[in-house]
Length: 283
Image (cartoon, rainbow, N blue to C red; front, side):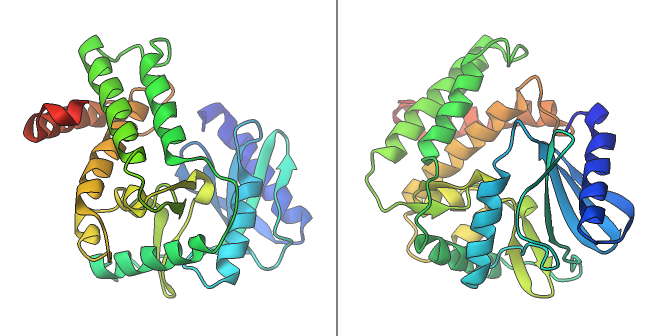
């Protein structure tokens, strides 16, 4: 979130919670990216705030409610207030249960894989309209093709990313394997380690696709414990996901700390992987 918007976003969260009867004397910023995540005290509620023009909060709230009701490992909405999206001062605010992180408990790859498998099982039971994973790939490709939005990206790297996104997205999409609703980005940053086990957060990136696309966002060791995975598809998906997140690092509006350095490093990893796999990967 733009620094100039943060004070207004914090005020929107505080006033929203207060209007619902929750006591708010302080707001601690836990995470700041495309949305602001706050811990409101002393009511101990997690608030997520995003600009109203760029959000899918209603979809996320409804999906989280249905997944939690079916016993899936997802963070729950705040039970003391109505589960809905609140709009205030140009922002949307959603309120969630705050889970104290258990930093002393190591997350095993097997435990991570089991939690993701449970989430996928619950998602298979839901019929909700979501983008296809290739839609997200195309968004990344269009970003790379737009010189105004990625002005610092060198031509040779622009061609590398564009070709990788196009060829791998097409190859994976044409395999014709089973597809289902996916979290979209179940990477460690979207997993909480709590007293109740692993819980997934940030459901706004949900899409449809093969489970290997979701698994590609997790550490490599996790894929070794997930059952019935096509390892060839998973390798392709890991490279595709790397190309996608690399593209986002070159967005002129990217706010990830140290993002440009990471984007440069990941370009080198993509190039090395393509060289190892041979020309067929380049499409």
